[in-house]
Image (cartoon, rainbow, N blue to C red):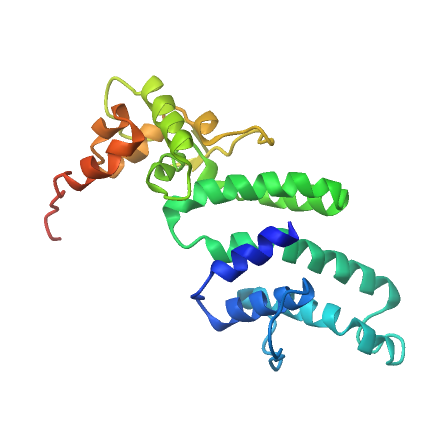
Length: 250
């Protein structure tokens, strides 16, 4: 996991904001892969709208652990907090970092989220409590793994050709006879909310998450679905020939 994180972080050349860069740089220091001089930024605000600060400051505390030990007990952390912070930072740097900084396109989100969930399960071999807690929290945010959003992965360059082909085949098997005017598998009042997958394990694939509601997204976005019947290597030329959908101005 450490090697994959270091390699993935090295491939990122642009960061959305400076705190993304700081998060990445501190993580590489913690992993022993930093090159050159290391600069620590002055602490900024800590509140819910700047949640990444919690990660950054936890990293800073973990890196300064030996120096903090020289201070009077309880000055910054108590003895039992040191171990917890170190465990949290180990999880963040080995599992969370790479998925946070690598997903910039919505079409990549289904694939990235599925791989992240599997990574959380694999982390049981390192720390079972953290793995189960993180997986439970993430299971409440599986928006991109709902049947409605999974089809967007057809257009992701991160998804293997074989996976995209199986995803297309799965869609064709559940293609409705008529265009869906609204999703069918929802709960709650009004428009409702999409249902999250009931279970995801290490063998789950994107094609396993497809159902008839997947076609609602295709219809809603006015996507010409004829390319689904072609081999993946023929998709891109076909997509370029799609007619542009013109909409009237309000």
